[in-house]
Length: 158
Image (cartoon, rainbow, N blue to C red):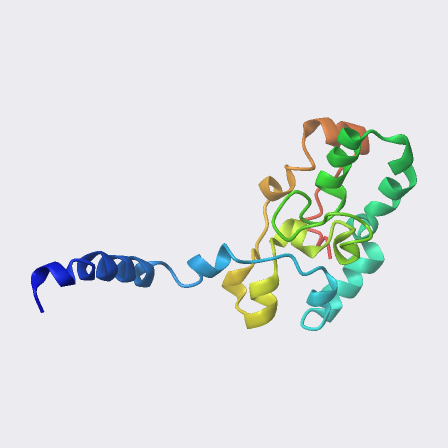
């Protein structure tokens, strides 16, 4: 085969080498989608039951639903950012009607989108060990004063 007709071969091999050298799960992590806390219950029944029963996050949209009619779209978006799962992110909450399974601040708010973890059971496909820094997107200085947030990481948020 003449060299000119094989000009595509080197770039193709380089691309393949790059894909194969990526850490396991790296390409799949970008594909992870939100599946809702109910998807966690099958493998994590004790944690899920405790979360639903004791965590305020598990019912975080209740107040938003009550106040929604009195809020501007911008104010509502600010509420959704912390009171629902994955708002503004691919596969995340879009509305109470369209994505009811993501209507509260569920497991994936802290642990990340869970589709790959739910599908494979791979612990590396989800964030397991959390730190206070993981909470600060919603529980920042202004909200701490306003809502009296106390980190429950060591006590077990679920």
